[in-house]
Length: 86
View 1: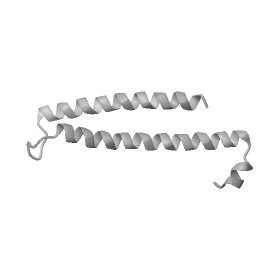
View 2 (view 1 turned 135 degrees about the horizontal axis):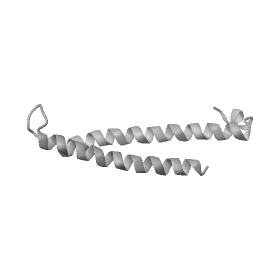
View 3 (view 1 turned 180 degrees about the vertical axis):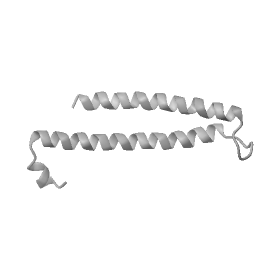
View 4 (view 1 turned 45 degrees about the vertical axis):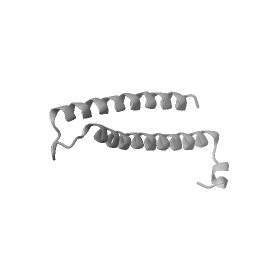
């Protein structure tokens, strides 16, 4: 959307455009967090036990993912709270 088209929108339409842009930005943040989780947890937990994860590695991965998801939830709640204040 170019600047001239944005100027012709009603305040409600402008707010809707801003909310959509914010939602897209939030989705990109969450996607990046999931990618980071996969890489960080695998690097942290996966050893050299071969082509399968042993029970210790599986437990480590589960705990690591849980911590990432806890952080993701906190970030999501914060973003929604901030978005609601707009």
